[in-house]
Length: 166
Image 1 (cartoon, one colour):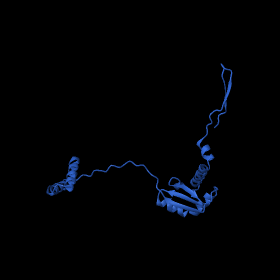
Image 2: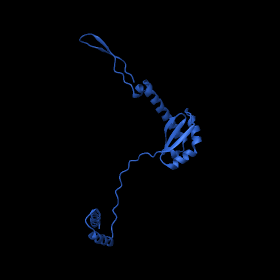
Image 3: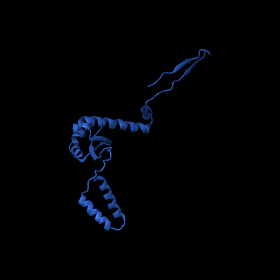
Image 4: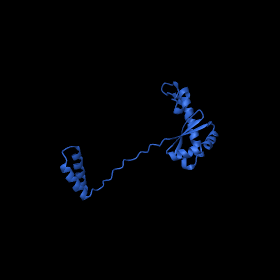
């Protein structure tokens, strides 16, 4: 988006000043101008085009579990979330390659890799399981016979926690 130059008229002095307004360009404008980043942008656009085409030709069940990861010299790399999806896409590889080739990028080989997406999960708290009264008695008698040390300390800690729950 460009803004045209502005003409400023100063009433008091009567002078007219032409000022080139600051140009505003999108980041793609600068990335496309440099040869190295232009190649990166062209590759990114090709990957986006392939990804959209893959979503259109792949079975609906795979749209969220598989995606185009890269393209290089006729090889399209597909990442899947699990092995079952990877196996099915490998079976369909020739048909998918033919369909993806229609979008303009030559597809000779389809390489399928299992790369699960990172799923942020909240840590699950361990459930406290109660110890029976008989087990507590047996552990207490065993603890009393042990010399002081890490094993006795661990058993004492276990019995303290068990007593709090029971």
